[in-house]
Image (cartoon, rainbow, N blue to C red):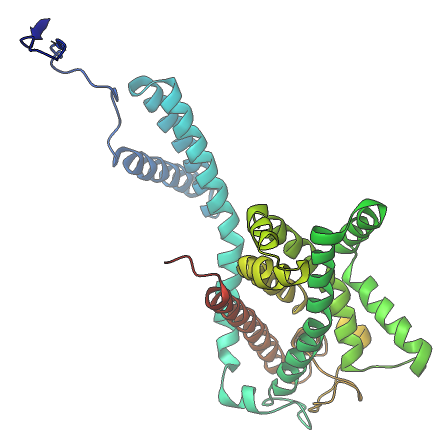
Length: 373
């Protein structure tokens, strides 16, 4: 230990500086595995698992199981990397690597069906993804050819009408629950919204059909009936998502506005809503994605047709989900033409949902409050 004291001067105090030598080779972080070690262990475990399953398949004459080899390789990796980390890095770092491997494996497992569905839809839908499919309907088409323009128009019109009904009602309900609602009324509304969130879509379709049948008679099939059925499914999603976003707005912003003499309604429109507009827009996009692929309620309320229909208040209206269902279930000659149209419509529906989500992100970015000075 070295100790050095500065000379004492007038008006100052002595300062003692202690310097302790550090032993060579000591480290606060301790021993660590290199960054490439987990990757080498993963490749080695997968290679060993594939070799093992290959030998078993060759000896028994059975098919090679890729899923089994990947699963066994992943389990072996978790065990090996945990044991190695415990021996080199200690128990705490070993537990961290174990949890990281489990979480990463769960993420990859969840991505498998999503990627599989995307690959299947794209590979099968590209066969009829041509100009005729987008600029023609199924009127007077009994075999090959035809398109889904009438179904796309119907989906956009019905979804737009459902959004016009659902978004104002859901947003105003969430504003009431957050800013005004107190007591039993607010609790009752919250309970009913939670119940509506879990109702089956077929129940919403039957409800809308029964309401319009009371006034227009049984057998009514119109696009607006389908829009009402979808709005029943959209409203609770909009309410819950918007409510959570409004609750995230700091109360200090409201209090600052009230301190300036701004009335409550103007505080909501100028402070609360602009602050939470990004989250509200995301919730609305999620609600649209929730209902745009519904088949059962639209099959009951809007029906299906082979002709174009631009009027929501007149006659049947085709939609993409119902188009996929009818093409697959009512196959004619040749059957491949109907199946190709069904896959192409499914791909078009996925692209529409993707476009709506991108539009929602752009809207959220445009109207989000500016944080820069």
